[in-house]
Image (cartoon, rainbow, N blue to C red; front, side, top):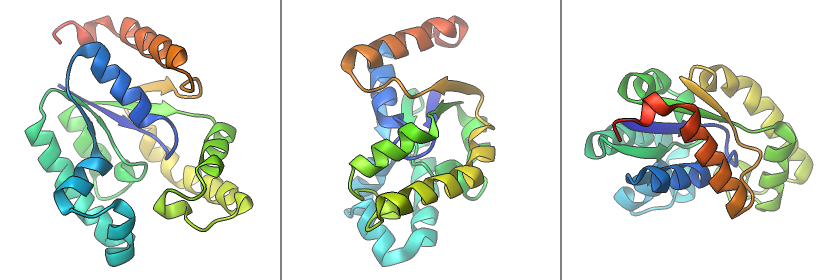
Length: 180
């Protein structure tokens, strides 16, 4: 079984996904890192060379390949992954989707602190980041809400919070993890 972690950028998908994979003793895949390894370029470079449309096409190809290669794993998807093509349907058909719901103020704060590390936020002022988050969340939320499970992502700052959050998550869905 693959557990796909979805949500907006800076929601904590990688942090939560890595901790969940450790707890379950199964592999963890960060889809963006997987793409970078396979393409030999960073996501930012792919965006610069191919635009968002080109990146999204590559992302879909690599999503399918990573799924085939890792049938029992936790995969953190990019923030836009569920929102393009029929990716959310693909994710739901091939595993268990977990929407990491993180409050808008926490998302904005985390993204502003990163100083434009992400391609869609590069070069933006704090106010532009705030506006981009508000606009994109309205567009993306319907896709994220199609996830089979929802989990809160605000409390993923310290190692203790992460550990407690993941332990509570696993305990909340015992039948899901019985066979792992």
